[in-house]
Amino acid sequence: MQETEQIHELKEPLEQHLPHIWQDLVYHNDAKLTLCVPANLSGQKQPHYPVILFAPDSYTNRLSALLQFTHKGYAVAILNVLEKDPLKNFNSAARFLMLHAWQYQLDPHRIIAMGEGFGAYAAAGAILGVGKQTINREDIHTLPVHFRSCITISGKFTLAGQPQLTDLLGKRQLPPFLLFHGEGDKLVSFQESRAFFELLNNQAADVAFYKIKDCPHGSDAFFTPYVLDLYANFIAKTIQKGK
Image (tube, rainbow, N blue to C red; front, side, top):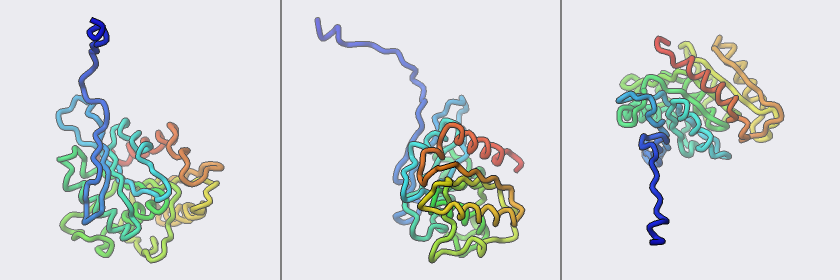
């Protein structure tokens, strides 16, 4: 009798409400990514979510922070280590998402490039070098990549052994950029983002730059509710249909 009294019955909502997470998806050879897709709360039979392709910083794990985007209706793909061929890896990952968009309910026409630290170079460089075969493994004419916008955090934009960003610039109009950097960053100089901001201004790009006072490298200040809203509002404007 005592055992029966300890059995409790619950009636809870049965609908999906947590994001789906796929880990270790191989997008090229041994290069892998983690994909987080929102729960379908819209009632649509087959929703397709805009996707943020995130190139990480080797000093910080951002999975928990980036999951917040799924609650705003965005899928997030997080690359693994990028030290070797960062630009080619970023573009290969974008094509993987495009080719598997239907399988994972992604919108292949609304991909946002995002990166932090070293990863910011990969995200920004892939956009600046759109149309350059030298930074792509796949044929750029067979499956061109089009990024709708770019967000960088604590960007390290000058890397030894990698192309200079100025050398990647073409004649195409650049998509909008949103830059963040902490003034207290001791790992990546604040001047890196300032110089990149000036480069974009010289190209007449649509760019906004936010500096966070006293903020060190890898801080959670880059993912507070207010800052997350800045990201989300920026993305929403850049993925509007017709743009």
